[in-house]
Length: 423
Image 1 (cartoon, rainbow, N blue to C red):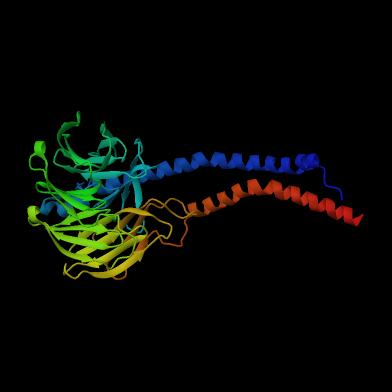
Image 2 (cartoon, rainbow, N blue to C red; image 1 turned 135 degrees about the vertical axis):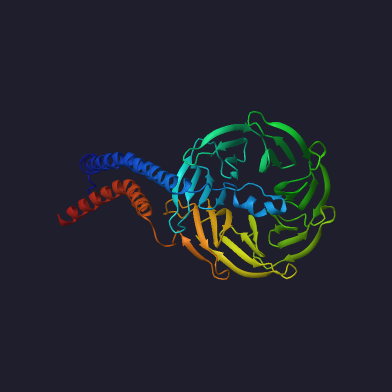
């Protein structure tokens, strides 16, 4: 048996293939700038539409829904990677910076503005208050962006604050939660970061928190929650540690009215009455949840929403002593949800991952008019957009680059064998 001349195969087959490949890549590469131009043009067009048809008709309140919902009870929530306010949705993400969507049509959200000059990490926190957007990248960068003009975002201040897990904004004060404590800064003039109060506990492992009146309610991910008296910033004191379990995980905390909600992995949802912060007491423990713990809690009109990694759960809290599960909803099976918010009858979710052959889909919107049967309205699962198909073709094309030379060589070998057999 005579094998084909390797040099001949390389010269006549493989080199021909790569010559054709070079031509295709040149065409593909020349198309990329066009895609970028179309993308930028789309943002500019949507921004212009929003500015002319929405922003000039009425001045929207930029306070995020989380703070607006609880402001009547004196509650201030911590930051999140997603915020919803009227017809605007704000999203902050590692590779894309800050993005602002017009969600007037929940079935077709439009990207209307973006700000990418940010150093971000995988987990980022954001709060919107009045005309300012506050962003922390869970590393050391804290940004204050001016959004007075809806069509333009500018950086007002940039501070370095180390070791912050989450933060809250109340009036002109920044409350920075750290793994072992809480720091309070005065940021009124945006020029300097003035530390005015601090509390530390070396044995703590803080994860999330909320403020109400003169108290801070802090989730300790390794044991439960703690209450701090912050009436005097210069003398912050511990009211009490509530040790619920020292061998489990507590990811999130939420306050609605006089009730505190804290989720315990694999155990359930704890509800405490905090009418008197000096003597909080347990109301109930709902244990009808699976092992997929929540990373966020929301309560609206006696309905509890728990964010799960793959979707969310809805609970009826009309009777806090007997909470009932209404539904479990799973959306994108490839998604990994890190934040959500509720406005009207819709839940907006931030997914940090998508399927292998899907284009970036960070935003999911679910209609919860029927609490027992939520319906996803955006994006429609199973319906790929044009970008998805282009990505699939690209994967196939890249695979061909690797496989084709090997196939050409094997074909040449087979042809040589057939010739030898015929002889």
